[in-house]
Each structure stands twice: as structure tokens, then as C-alpha cells.
Length: 175
Image (cartoon, rainbow, N blue to C red; front, side):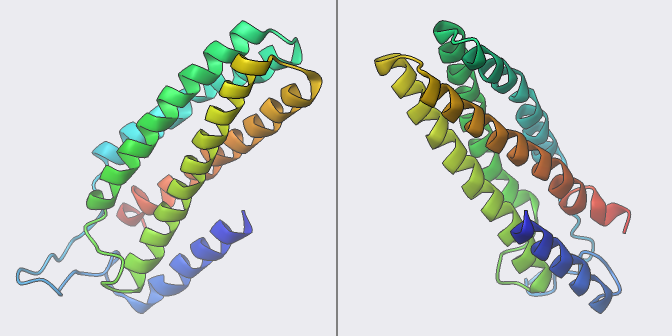
């Protein structure tokens, strides 16, 4: 959370240095004077990410009651949604209209999106390990707690992305 807070602070620190936001992209052969990020793919990705809360909440509650099958199904659904979010996230980079090394704006935005992508990948891999464990070894108290901790991590990933999405994608239209 602190890492993202520092990046957002950097984003707003850089903002006053430019009269237009995001800054015009003049490093190409054809200048792009209004390079606001596209909204289509990022919005679909946000919607999918929010929808993944349903299977995560189900897995979280099912593991408390030691309902193994329900936990497995919910984790499997979450994995499908999580992989979908990761795939869409790679397409979001082209929606930014900047490369990471074009200017300070591009660097900060790519870092925010990239680090959140890293969190998505880690969480999906963690879900995959949880699902494999539960399917192979069962759902004991220790691993039910692990599913719950992973659920809290997923809630954090979704919650932080709601804020970051608002800043990065629709935000430049209003700031």
C-alpha cells in the first residue's frame, strides 16, 4: 500500500510540471497532443476484477466451514478470472499511449500498472498452489487459514486497483 501511495504521490507531484495532462506525446514522427488513456479494455478488466470477488468471498466463507468442494470450485473460478485479468492487463499497456521511457508520466503510470500486474500474477499463483493443496491433501485448519489470508490479499488487490484505475484511466479527463 505504501509503495502504491508513493507512486500516486509521484504521479500528482509530476502533474504541475505540464500544462496538459497527460503531457502531449511529441517523441513520435506524428505528435499525439491529447494522449488520454483508452477506457475500453481497462474498464472491462476492472469489471472482471470486481467480479472475481464473488468466488473469492465464496472460497473465504467455505474454507471457514471446511467445505472442501465449495472451496475448490470457488478457487478454480477465481483462477480463471485471475488469468483473464492478467491477459487483459497486458493489453492495457497499449491503452496508455506512452512507453515507460517516454517521460516522467509514462514511467510512473507504467510502474503503477506493472507493479499491480505483478501482484495479480503472485496472487493467481498463490491461488493455484492453494487449489492444488486442497485438491491433493484436503482442507485442514492451517490451510483454511492460508485460503483466508490469500482472500485478504485478493481483496487488497481489487481495492487498490479500483483507486489506481480511477487515477490512471478516467482521471486525466478530469484533472
